[in-house]
Structures are given as structure tokens and as C-alpha cells.
Image 1 (cartoon, rainbow, N blue to C red):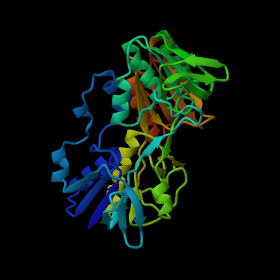
Image 2: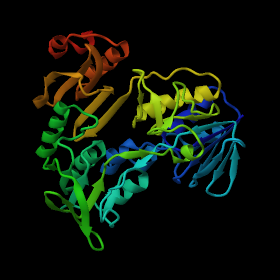
Image 3: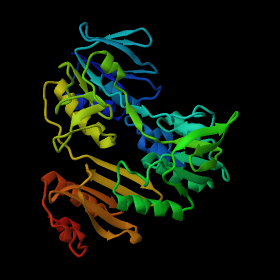
Image 4: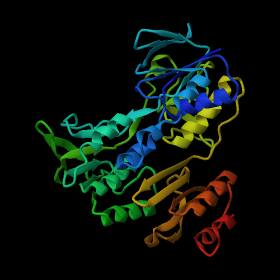
Length: 400
């Protein structure tokens, strides 16, 4: 059997590990656009940028692992075309790889600023090792940094660069921070947290232009001009599914896969950020998380081996900002009932989300026991009274 994996990130590394653990002994090739073997991306906006995490620790597996797994890494090249009838992948180098099973682990790419001046030197995006390295060279005390986008990436960068002595302004088009991923209660906590560290938070301000001549000098919004020596944009990502779409695979905000990771072609699978998949609650979603990349890759690899098992894992996410750890489990929806447990002013609290009385999600701020309990309750579809959740005299492990 000849297996080819397109993409060399977290999902690809996990797929190789699962195939190896299952005793796969056929031909296995991983195609990666970057010159690096699979590595962790979360530290790039956290500990690695802060200088607390050496580059060697980023890599998910030692080089010997791939050799021992009979896996060939083809790095610094891209997959240019797929011929489903001939079952071949043509690379940007001109080489052709034959496959019996193919796995898309292509992830996503940053969304670029859609405004004049977005291509000026001094405008950075944070997706890969080279991005983080390039940005770190400009983190000099006294400089002004404008972060465009108040999501996880932007806020993590804002939290890290403060230690370098930069003046930081976060510009967010919506009326609160982390609007796509956090409750209003958690958003408000993080607004106050960042402001307490000297970050200037500008809500309801969309960037209309990046100004400058040979280097960025400011960002312009409808409310005025914000001077900036450096701009970091974190306004979301786009799934890398164009190659799959051209190949005729079903795509809809990601590569459409079934509960086993199979695409509309039974010999082609997909895992990770690039997929539109059936989530644990039975609805289709596209998730951008390490957990999903790892767990979905395990299931896809098993399906490639003819051992399909349905993917029904409870999704979880995390973010480190200053000395605060945010842990989230489940998928919340508008209309859910939010129940606050603990006092946000203590920097230790959680927000449980109930849907028709059933625990559907939890956001835990420096509250690991609540997070652990929440994951268990979500998986069990437990029904818990709001007043019991809010009662901190009830230990988290006794909820439900």
C-alpha cells in the first residue's frame, strides 16, 4: 500500500504516529511546503515568541521517528495537482507520487488584511516559525505595536510583547474581544486584564488602511489614526482546500468528510483545520484546534487502514495570556444559558453553558478542576441545575 499525506503539521505527524503504531509497513510520504518537519504552532505566539521555548522543542518528533516509521519527508515542496483516476499527486518540483490512500492535512492559512497598505514592510502575520522569528527581531522597548484583531493570536501576542517594553494597541472591529470564541463574561475579563497591563484596547474600530512610505507608520480606522512601528494582523484563517476542490472533492468551508475522515472519494481522507466534519454533537463544523487535528488524524489514519471508528471527541481549546490560562471545552451557541461559577475579580472563575438544561460548554479561567469537570459533563450530556453550578461550595468533581 502506498500512502501520501499532503501537509506537514500536527495532523500529519499524528497520522504517521498512528500508522506506525498500527504496524503499517507500506510506502508513506509526507509532503510539506515549509522546510521544517512537523512542529507545534501554539508556542509561536506564546512561549517561543517570549524567548522561553527553544526552537528544538517545537518539533513534534525527532528525525529518527520518521525513518523508523518508514516515512519519507518531502519538505519545501507543494502538491500542485491530484489525478484521482490515475491516483497520483504531482508536486511543485515536477515529481509524481502514486498513492492507494491519500490524506489531506493541509491546515489553513492566515487571512490577509483587505485594505490599502496591507503589503507594507512592518506588517506581520503569525503562522509559522519564520513569521515568529521575523517579528521577534523588531520587539524593541519603546516601539509602538498595533495588533489588528482581538482574537486568541492577537491577544497572546499583546501579552508577550509587553515584557519587551513595547506600547501595544489592540484594534478590534467588533464590540468585544474574542467574539467568535468566548462568552461576554470572559471577553470582559480579558479586556480588563489587558488594560491592567497597559494595553490600549480599541473596540468597534475597523482598520481601513495601513499607512506608511517605505515602512508602516500607522493604521487608520474610522475613528482616527493609530501610530505604529509594527503591525501584527490576526483576523482569522482560511482553510487550505483549493487543491481538493480542483480535484473534484466536496468542499464547504473546508473539505467535507464523514465521521471517519473520508472525503467524497473513498480513497481520499482529510483531517485537521482543513476539514468540515461532523462534530461530537452531530452538527457540521470546521475547528481550528490542536485537539481536533490530533484526534481526527488518528481516526482518519485508522480508516485508511480499513479500521474505521467514528470521530466523536469533545473539542477543547486553550490560550495562555500573562499568567492566566483559559481552557475551553465544548462548542457554545447563541442562545445557550451562561452560568458564572466563581468571581472574575479573583482571576479564577468559569462559565458553564447550558443548552436545554444540558451542559454544552465550559470556559475555565485559571480553574482547571472546573474545566476537567466540564469536559466530563459535556461528554455525558449531563443535566445540571444552574444554581448548583454557581454554588462554589459544591466541589467541581461533584457537579452532575
